[in-house]
Image (cartoon, rainbow, N blue to C red):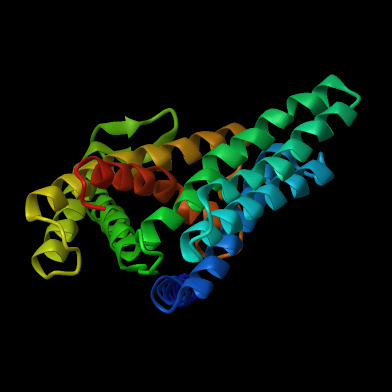
Length: 276
């Protein structure tokens, strides 16, 4: 038990250190971090759903996702014309054309997982470029870090209040995730809102306090949906974790499932109120 706790603690500290380096050092470290995340999470998602089937098509899909990130990164970082990003349709077409060479119906049906992985994992991470680059092409990962702090605070709040009050209480989605309780949900909401408010009041997040509170609440709600969405996939596939890349914590998809829903919605809110 102690060795497992130590393993989780050490890997958790290393994970946070890598995230901080990727978000705060420079744009190239950020690009390497996200490219790694895209490749690993897509590999985990396809492995859960497809095993070892369609290996060539999976490689093509991951290559397409990586190309998409690189193209949008270059558009934002080096002031390339926006239509440069349209080159993504070349590898994306290769993925679709490859389906013509699948001979049996069962294998063809697996393409639904190929496309779902691109939409579910790759698209949010590709569009993250628009969060870390301003309109002049300057890199600043601070807002993305604030987004992650809100999500992490939500997770901590859900764990603390869920463990304290939720064991015998009403469950949130018992058919999908039996351990998630309404007590944990409200605890996560409280911690997410408090984290956003503190970052606003300290100047770490340069938005009015009321917008920060709304942002924290919205990101918590959609983070819960993201967590449940991945739990649904794992239940359908009969697996406990998406992978084993983080000792004691599971796969990357397990760690970023909330982020894939919460961060795009948080960015949309800030765009709608003209704050980014």
